[in-house]
Length: 473
Image 1 (cartoon, one colour):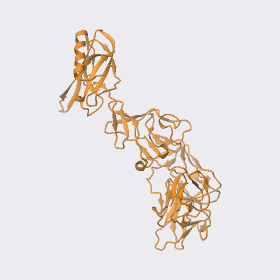
Image 2 (cartoon, one colour):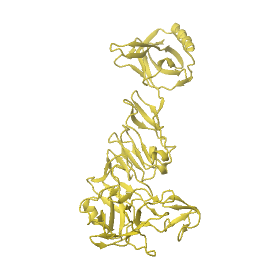
Image 3 (cartoon, one colour):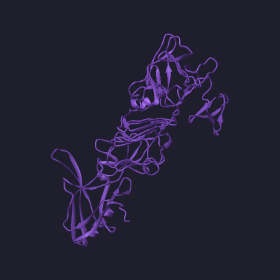
Image 4 (cartoon, helix red, strand yellow):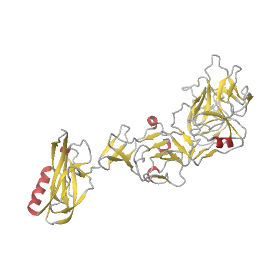
C-alpha cells in the first residue's frame, strides 16, 4: 500500500499523472468530519489501484456572516472516461502517520462532487477522551462510538454512566464490543447508557458488549432503536421499563435513572412470623404486599424506652423506605408482579433512606475501630446474657449489618443499652438482622480457605463476611 510521506512526494505523483490522464472529475468542497481540526496538519490524496490521481488543496474563506470556513478542492485524473473506483488516503504530518478513511467514489469524466450545501466529507476515525477517561471514536461528523470505558471503583462507586453528548453536537450512537474489556465487572452495580442514542443493542451477558457482567448488574438503555434484552435477562432497563428486576443480597444495588418494573425479586429468606427489617429499592403494590405479610414504619422512641412502630402499611410499600416486616409464612424470596408496570424504582440516593431515626442501607456495614458506631442500635440476633430477642441493641465495635436492612440511630440525652420494639402496643420478638455482640462480626463467616468458622472471632486474621474481607487485629 502506498503511504503518503510528504507534500513534495505527493506533488511528484501529481505531476506524473497530469501528463498521462485525459479525463477529469472534481470535488469542489471537501471537508473533514472533525470539528476544530488543524487542516494544515493533514494531506488528502485520491488514488486508483495505488496510483495517486490528485491532491487536495485547502483554502480558508470568510463567509458573509464573517465566519471562516476551510475546505479542499480536489481534481481527480483518469485515462478512462468512467468506472474507476477512487479511494482516498489521509496523512497527518505532526504524527507522521496515515489515517484510515473509508470513503470512495466512482470516477466519471466531468463529474462534480461536493457543493457548499452538501460537501464531500472525509471521515477520520480519530479517538477522543471525556473528562472521566472514557475513550470514543468518531463515526460521522456529529456522532461517536464508545470504544473503551475507564472504571475506578474507588472514584466511581460502582457506577458507569455515559453522557448523552460529549459536547453540544457529538452524540454517542454506538458501543464497541470490547468497550468494557478492562473493567472489573464484579465491582460494577449499574451501566447507564440511557441518555445516549445507542442503537441495535441486545443486552446479553453471555456474548457481546455486556459479556461477563453478572445478572444483578443493572443495564440501562434508551428506548426503541432496536435495543432489546436477551431472553430471560434480568435487570435490563429499556426506555425506563424493566421486565424483570433482581435484587441480590450478595451485591449492592444502584441506579442512576428512575424506572418502572413489571416483576421484582429480592432473594432473601424470611421465616414465618419472625420479624425482620427490610429496606428495598423497589416499591411493592398494596395487593402484593398483603400476600407477603405486614410492613410497619418507625413512629418514635417512647418515654418508657420502647421503639414504637406504626400499624401495618395500608397502601403501597414504598421504595427506599425502611420497614419492619412480619411475614405471614416462610418465604424464600420477596417476589412481586405487576403486569401494568407500577413497581417503582427511584434513583439511588433520591431518598435519604431514613424514617424518623430508622435508617435503611443497600450496602453491608461493619462498624470497626475506624468507623465506630455512635448511638447505633441494631436488632438482636439471639438471646445473649441480658440481650433479649425483639429489641434494638446498642452496637459495639465489631457489629455488622447486611444489605437491605435497617438500624436505629438514637440521639437521646441518656441513651439506653436497648429498646424493645412495640407495634400496636404489642412487643415483638424474633428479629434477626444484626449481631451486636461486642467483638463479634457475624455467626456465619469463613476464613480465607473458605472454611466456615464457629463461635466469636477472636483470632487475628482475615475473614470473609457477606462477601467482604474483614480484618481482626
